[in-house]
Image 1: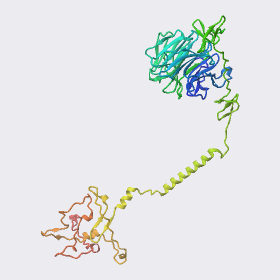
Image 2 (image 1 turned 90 degrees about the vertical axis):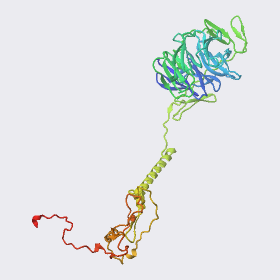
Image 3 (image 1 turned 90 degrees about the horizontal axis):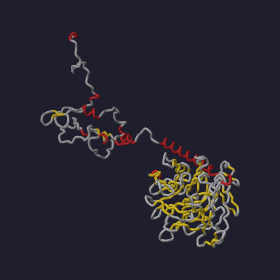
Image 4 (image 1 turned 135 degrees about the vertical axis):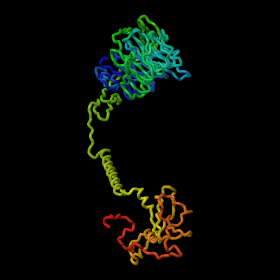
Length: 546
């Protein structure tokens, strides 16, 4: 790639440039409305573009034009606004004429035109105004005196004609849906390249329509909208992803993304002085025409603005139309570092970014804030207070939280109750011990404790269960047999695998009437005498010791 190659492309309301040799982006035009198409004149170092929102064609000096004096572009309106909407633009850098396409939607059916005027917008004339609906792009080749355009209307096609609008003929009419981005490879036999946004194609052919070939196709193109070619590379912008992409013009290799996040990119051009042949002679150099001089193969033709007639004199071709003063050259903007030129009466002043100042935004300003001033001084104390408050809340929560006693243990402890009653029954009132059957909810029984009797009664501890078992005697039943417990037949088994003591009824001599009644004694207070005899035969004596 040659040095100092800059790819200029539309990005919403701006024209931006990507300097390939430096791999950085620059601002070319700022704060327009909606830029749709781009071209340039390398001899005059001017950029031309279509603003589809304002329906205007404008121009400006390119960045670093006039030996580096221009730092950023400043727009100049060419006053070609009409009822139609411009859609594309191309510059004849040899005869210094401007070509563009436009669409008139005022009728029931769109009507397209191919227009021409002087480079400053004077003497506009319609060249093609029939069988054309939605022209999307135009390219001119002053070396051969021809122009080419694409039509995306009901009958999509690519056509060509001489630069005066004559000798019109179609080049492509089949296998085409939405052609756009038509461009010419001047260094490769003037081959034509274009994109098809609906078919996801990039195609090429010879200028006479032969040798048509698909270079790239597929969803990875992301619906290209505009295209340009320079040396061995293609450059295009995508509709779906908003990217500027480069790839070999023969379809080899892989695509390389140069810029991303573009807003509705619809135009791209490679800006380099070697792209166009600047050594071509101008057939209109002697200017025999009073208004328009248009290049045709082998020479030139004079033309007049619309609604005027030509009358030929002996020396020149004259039009019965008033002569107009040439438009002044675009104004030069010296703003640097992202500054923008604004009109202040008759002068241009720079609106500088926040960190720059000076007449040309050339001075970097180190903006410092006094301590305690501004929003920072207010935000920092608030953040500190919030952190302290959060730490205090966490500390309070930790101190008040009852560690060591889980909710399961607390509920288990509170749900258990033990009741000691007079007699021999001990009841455990917790249903948590019953796992084999449904828990039976019963009202809590008041535990019968009397603190008043502590001082008057014997304080020796007596286990009620042991007391009951200690007084058990053999009680004869009605059949003359002895029984220890009541007959359990007919009684429901406890639902739990653990028998609650309340389900076991023990009879004592006090509860059993009849003969054999014996008085209740406390065996723990009346132990049996120790005789020293082994009545249970637990010790085996050695016969030799007897």
